[in-house]
Amino acid sequence: MRARIPFDATTPKRRLGSVLSASERADFAIAMLRDVLQAMAPTELEPTVIATEEPEATVSAPIRVDDRPLDAVVEDAIEERTPVAVVMADLPLIEPESLARLQATAGDVVLAPGRGGGTNAMLVRTDSFSVDYHGASIRDHRRIAGERALEVGEIDSFRLGTDVDEPADLIEVLLHGGPHSVAWLREAGFRIETTAGRPTVTRVPPEST
Ligand SMILES: Nc1nc2c(ncn2[C@@H]2O[C@H](COP(=O)(O)OP(=O)(O)OP(=O)(O)O)[C@@H](O)[C@H]2O)c(=O)[nH]1
Ligand SMILES: C[C@H](OP(=O)(O)O)C(=O)O
Image (cartoon, helix red, strand yellow):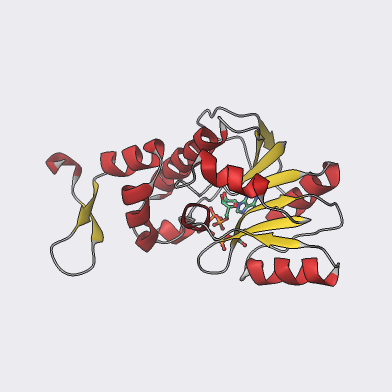
């Protein structure tokens, strides 16, 4: 089954701007993408990355450059042929089993909600579905499917539901993430701090790592 992985290669992960420079965000976004592709490798999903521009780094999947907005590129994927899986590139916790659940769940449309209201992954089995990302998109996708009398499946998954948008998400990566993302964060000096109360993430200067 085809899988499309939308990837903002132009201004990735702006919401991490308080802890990462622009070049670091680009590198970290690639590391997360590599974890998504590594999780996909043992499955029957066949990924193509739909990138806003050619990434500087290489990844283990074909890249199609399309600088149109997210909705347009995903609509194209649906119109091109169904079934199609759409998996976001900022899900470094996913494992092959998470993707197997996506494929094994019944429904004309299977949605994997993200924390904060996004739609981190979906499996679309009918071209009568359309998408409306950003701004609590899970609510919009449920509405669109309902309006078109489509059967909706949903996946309650910590690993599919954890997308990395904000600095507070980095602890989940350090604790549960894939090898590329964890290695990148640790190499950049990020550590888990457990001295007081709830664990947090700190960044130690390079000379002390
Ligand atoms: N091809 C494509 N992918 C996109 C676009 N916008 C976001 N994405 C990807 O969709 C996924 C979820 O989007 P966001 O969480 O908003 O990612 P982002 O835009 O890098 O993050 P912010 O800059 O913080 O909004 C990420 O993997 C992005 O790389 C787009 O316009 N085109
Ligand atoms: C693309 C968008 O990601 P978020 O901005 O919610 O992380 C969404 O899932 O609708």
